[in-house]
Image (cartoon, rainbow, N blue to C red):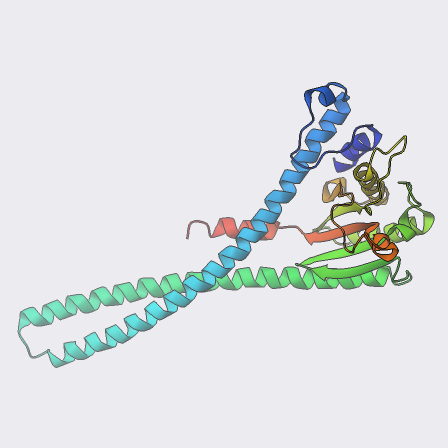
Length: 303
């Protein structure tokens, strides 16, 4: 789906707008039907990405809240246990007292035992949920670390100034320089870049639970050609070219998102030649799918 939408974006003469930003009535009038469909598909993909990131943030918040609730429950159980022991002692001391006093204490003791049993059950459920959440987070972290190592192994033959692989925020970032992928002002991938992307495609095909966002980046020097109106236009076209190579090597299109960020997400200062070279890059952001986490949250939503 992303592949088709990306082709329409590439073929259009209009600048690609940021997620959520619409065209003016005049601009919209001159757009082709396919471009409008691609524009709508882009917003849908942006919304999907935002939803998944929101779900992950909500899960991390829920994990912290669950830990807090678990600690509170443990304290309640401790207090109830101490209270129960005190009540038992009073009960034993007053066994020889009047029948009314004994009956009252017996009733109070039973109530405390029931409350303690309920709290212990709640504590057990929360501990189980916490354990499962931590296990999933741990599993995803191990998965991404293993994936990072596989990507590094696959790209071992390339120089450090051509590409780099690192983990940030639970995701694997593969940063590929223009030196490896593109000539100046072009969106055609160079042969050595195609070789690197082919190796990444092989890794992706063996890890079907991983999705990828392809982000095009430029430096701040303006560009305006017959084909590209600005850096944003060029960055989108380059991301689309990378996606086409990956899908051409068997990676499912619904696992890929192509986007261009122009000069608006620099890694270094654009005031120096070296900084501009660093900023001219294409980043492949590999992240785990959240299906298992969503299922777990749904399973415990009523508890």
